[in-house]
Image 1 (cartoon, helix red, strand yellow):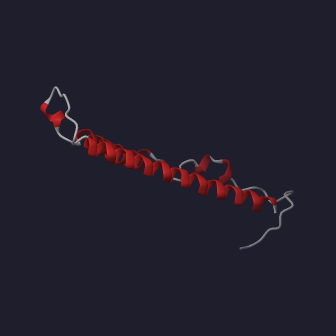
Image 2: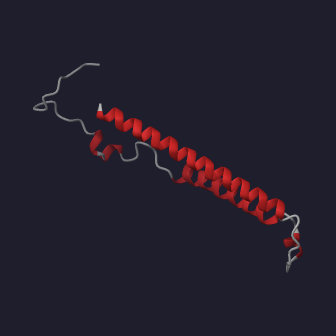
Image 3: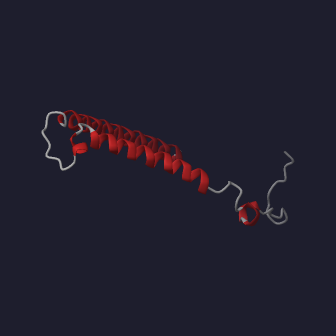
Length: 108
């Protein structure tokens, strides 16, 4: 009974965290969109001609994020270990003796 209540509380907390994340995410999208639009109407003082391109900084940030995300995915696949990497020496892969364990032996 108590575990069921804890699970309900955890689910409610998880939903609340998802709602907060969604709200913050939408707010960031709105702010970024507004800043992107405002950049077309502001005269910038630049030292290089390329800096005068509207949306350059937003585009550069977007490309950087894509590179980071895909780079992490590639690194994860290259550096990750297989599931059974530690299996031969792991404690949970050992067979336990049935003697003195007071377990029922089933043949499933």
